[in-house]
Structures are given as C-alpha cells and as structure tokens.
Image 1: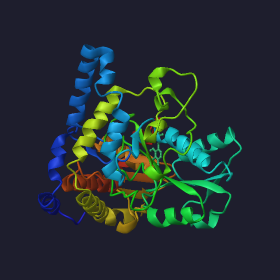
Image 2 (image 1 turned 90 degrees about the vertical axis):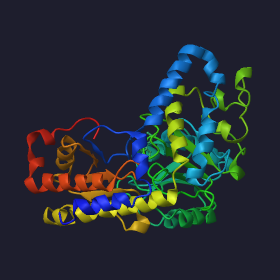
Image 3 (image 1 turned 180 degrees about the vertical axis):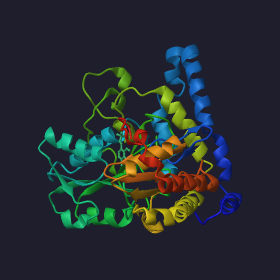
Image 4 (image 1 turned 30 degrees about the horizontal axis):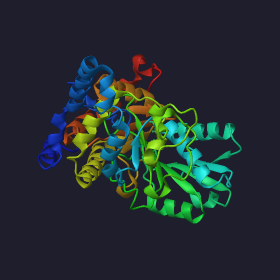
Length: 410
Ligand SMILES: Cc1ncc(COP(=O)(O)O)c(C=O)c1O
C-alpha cells in the first residue's frame, strides 16, 4: 500500500464531520463498513430506549398519550428535510416491503385501475419485486421486470401504472438520475415509487425538487435507527387524499378510537398507518434523527465520496494483482459504498476481514460490499481497513477452512 497513515491522519484533521464519531457507541477494535446494512448505535439512542423502558414501567398505558402514538407522523417530520420533503408528507411506519404494497395499491386507485402493469427493475433488492408480485397475485394486475440498468423509457406505455425502482442500487451502489427518470415516467402517465434504502442518510435526496410523488425507505441503515427500526413512506401533498391504500388498519382510520365497523381513511399521510407500532424502537430512531438535525448533507456527501475514493486508492494495486474487480461508479453516479467482485474468493475474503474486526458484507454472486458512513468513520479507520484488506488478500489468509463456512446472514 503506497498511501501513508500520516496522510489519513491529515485528512482527519481537516474533516468538519469528525466530531460526530464521539456520538456513537462503537465497539473496540472494530472498523465498521456495514452501515449500509445496519447502522451503528448513537449514544442518544441507548439513553432514549432506557428512558422509554422507564416510561413504560412508570406510566404504563398513559405512555401512548405521551408521545408514543404520534411518533409515526412526528418522526416523519424529522425525516422530511433529509429527503427533500415537507411537513406532513412523510410517515415513519412498517417496513419497505409493506410500504411498497400500500403505495402500489394507492397509485392504482388514483388511476381508477385503468392501467394493468406494475413494472419493476430486475436485479433490484428482491423484496421490491416479490411484493409487487404478491399484489398482482391477489388482483387483476400484471407484474413485469425491465432489465437492470436499461432505459426504463423503453418499457413504458399506456398500460404501465407504476414503476418501482431503487435510487441507489443495493449491489452496485449506482446512483440513478431521479429527475430524468421521474420525468419520463410522468410523461407516460405513470407513477414511480422510489426505494431510498441506500440513499436516505447517505447523500442529499431532493424528492420535491425532482417532482417525485411517492417514495419508501428504511431507517436501520444509514439513518442508524436500530435493528428492525421502521421504514418510511413519502406521498407528496398533491397526491394525498385521492383514495384508499390497501392495508386498511385501525391506525389509518379517520377515528381509530370510535371503533366504527366500517373503514374510512384518515386525512393526509396518516391514512398510510396500519396497526400498533413499537414505542421502544421509535424512541431509538427519534434520538438518531435528532442527531441528523446537526448534519450538513453537502459536507456528508463530500466526505462520503472522498472516503470511498481513499479506500479504492489504498487497495488499487492489490486488487489488480489478485483479479478482484472494482465496479464502484464514478463520483456523480455513486452511492456511499465500494463494490468489488471476485466470484471465487469474495465470500472468504469478507469472512477473513470480519475475523480481523473489519466488517463489510457479501452478496451473491461474488460481491464484496463496503459501506462508508461519514458520521462515524475516520480516514484512519478507512486506511486501517484497507491495510487489513491488502494483508488478507496478499497473504492468502482467506484460504483457511474457517473462512469458507456460510452462516444464514451474510
Ligand atoms: C433496496 C432495498 N429495499 C428493501 C430492503 C429491505 O426491505 P424491508 O425494510 O422491508 O426489510 C433492502 C434491505 O437491505 C434494500 O436494500
């Protein structure tokens, strides 16, 4: 490795975000490059969950009137500025899978079910396609894929109701042109639901500026809400109150505590609620979202691009010698991850790194994925991760039998 540790330390001294690291509980001896799967724990989240446990013990059911019940809308409003949305346009609820289902149903309702096709990108995170297929299985709609990375316009026509697509691709980390694609879809009279799983909290997202009407995302990755923290759903003001969404639960009713037998949707974003949520995990997420109020997203994006390039520069010689391909995109088309391909040894290299405390992840076939989270990673961390990577690959350490064993979560 030709880049020196001194250089990394200099970059840290110039880093305007370096102070955020002290606001996270990070285990000793770990360099965490998997914040694109599960973010690290903010210290404030630990305190907030402990407070909620005490509130539960002391206040019992009164807690629901002390902030628990309103959390989906309140946290939605905290999320809004991170994704270019306005107050009342974001609801923190359920998960991406269920939220896509709700939005597909809602969009087709706003179109009076006149268009029969639900289109989604092949190669996207599978749940987005699975849930579209589930929706079609129980209705008259038809699900179709268009090939990954192809021009969506070639697949649009007056039969297409809605397109489901990721803003940043989970495998390649490629960032899509949200403005251009949204415009094309709208020109064909269809709608698009953007999946922001790998962009919310990873880069600046401007839903209003790009004329987006529908989006979903999760909070357990870059937003550090905690394991199983809820997803979110965005519906622009102009598309609200146009019909039903299909998961008509009591929390989305216009008067949930009247216990009417017939459903009538609540007004605004609230109709996208379903049933009871977890006060504990919402308190963890709320503490994290409050931390995000102090983050300058332009600085975050700048550091993310700089860090990903720094890591790639550090490992460039070694990957070339060992036939590992770097498929990370150029800066303008990059999320916040580095993606490398080696079908033969990728899995074992990631396992060997994990055993050294450098945590990335592996996705079939052959993808080594490293997520870069500017809030709690330093350039020195990145340099050390690259050093371990080079040692593991050059020495052949990954060939040890223990690194070939597969567990259920990779
Ligand atoms: C692009 C994308 N969509 C959806 C999901 C998961 O959805 P859910 O929150 O419903 O588990 C992931 C998980 O990694 C993802 O990467």
